[in-house]
Every structure is written in structure tokens, then in C-alpha cells.
Image (tube, rainbow, N blue to C red; front, side, top):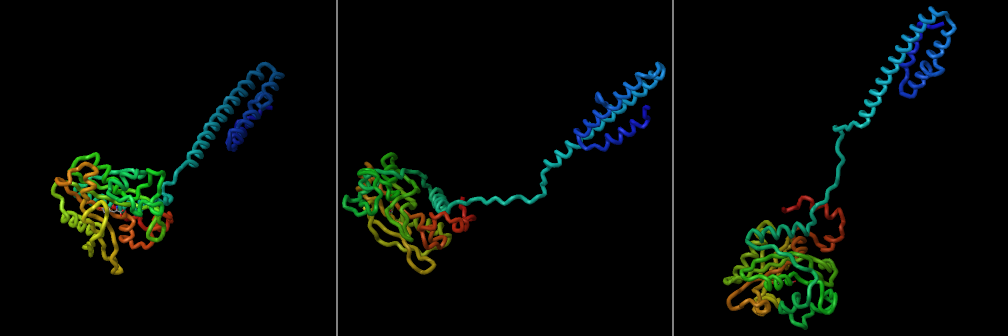
Length: 331
Ligand code: DAH
């Protein structure tokens, strides 16, 4: 009635299962209320006392063995499950990485950085200023006459009667000279705005402005710093031409041209000795102090350096254009 083989059969079956659900089914099959072992216990009830004892000893042993085998298998299944889980989470460090495109510094920004680097080395302090400006700081204090055409709506973006988007970084000269006492040696860079749009002009562009005020500042100092700067900027001895010019805030004034690859003279900056009227406006004694100032267009310099013939390319955000400047960081 009681098969001695039962433990062996159960063991085979138990080891054939692959997961806990299947194992539970076997658990019920052998040990459950209607399971094999329970049924055997019910059957031996009808046997004689001695036989009953013997058989129940055997049955109990079988029951214990089956329980032990189930527990062992259960542990194994759990271990296998964990192993699989870990394998799934495994990271293959030998896989090649994904290429992530990184941006690069905008050519205008790197041009500004390069210019600032030079002037910082020769003792200029970098300052920043405001883009929304009033008539006084943008025009009046710079000795720009009331009738000057730059003041009209064709050229200037007016916000109201007295407020505008600065047309030049020269406004910073006034703001600094009002605040600080000579000697003053500053350089500023930033956006300026003019109502213009073609291949050489955008309504917003960048300028660099330098100012040096002290007791013995001469026109020669101005010329020599500009030559040193342009040679540094273009990385070679440039062909430079100084031309007499006119700016209301400097006297005498000059413009600087350099010879480009096509042998054309290209204007790169304006400069001059600070006009006594400007010094007077900021309450600096013009018989004691002298100064020079200069201003240059950043886009113009960048176009010359990189051989770009349309200023609008800088602001169209065309990735094919911008990508070319990846390795041109100067910092
Ligand atoms: N502000 C001038 C412009 O926008 C440039 C300039 C010329 C600045 C002469 C100066 C200067 O400081 O001295 O065209």
C-alpha cells in the first residue's frame, strides 16, 4: 500500500520544476489536505495497532524527507531567480559609449575673450554696463550734437523720449568717469543696437570700448597700443593704416584700417584723444588729465579673422556654421 519509491518519485518531480508556482503545486500534491501523505495516514487508520505504528513511522520519515527536498528545491529556485535578475541588470562596460554632441563657444564670445585677454594683460580693468540707456549718457555727455543723424529713429531704437537701446558702448566711458577718479583704465564689451540690416549690419551687434585717462597719456600711446593689439589679435604683423577721422567725443580722432587677404583696406576701429568737453561733462580737469578712447566692432574683427563675408551668419544659429568654431576657444 505504501510505496517505498514515493520519496524517489517525489524527488524527481520536485527537481523537474522550474519555479515556485510549480513547486507549490507539488507541495499540495504530496503534503496538502488531500495530498498523498495525508491520504496514506488516513488509510493506515484501518490497520492493526502494530502495523499502524510501523507504517506511521515510515510515513513520517517519508513526509520529513519530502519536506526537506521541497525546502532545498525552494532555496535553489530562489537563488536561480536572483542570479537571473542580476544577469539582467549587468552593464556591459565593454560596449562603446554613445556619442553626445557638445556645443562650442560662439565665435563672437571667443573673439571678445581674446580681446579682453590682451587688454587685461596690459592693465585694463574689465567692466560691464547697461544696454538700456538715457539720452544723456548715450549722446549728450559724449558731446554728440542735438542735430546728429544717429539720434533719429532711422538709426536709434527709442524706448521713450529719453530712453533708448544704446547705440555704442561709449556710454560706459561716461558712467565710469562719473564714478571713478583718474587714473582710469577700463575695457568693456557688450551689445549695441542700431536700426540697420544687411550683410554688413545687424540691428544688434557687439562693441569693445577702451578708455585710458591719466596725467601723461599721449596720442603715441594710443597708436602703439592699437598696433600691439592688432598684431596680437591677428597673430602676425598686420598692415595697418591710420586715417584722420571725426568723432564728437574725441579730438583728434582717427580710424584704423587693416589690409585683408584680398588686399582691401578694411576699417576695424575708431579712436582718439578724449575731447575736453567730455572730460568737462564728467568733472575731470581737462588741463591736468588726458586720455584716449577707442571702440571696435567685434563682428567686424571676427569676420576678418575667420574670413566670413556675411555678418548675419553669426545670428542665424545654423549648426553647420557654428560647428566650424569648435576648436577656436581662446580661454
Ligand atoms: N562709438 C564709436 C562707434 O560706435 C566708436 C568709437 C570711436 C569709440 C572713437 C571710441 C572712440 O571710444 O574714441 O562708431
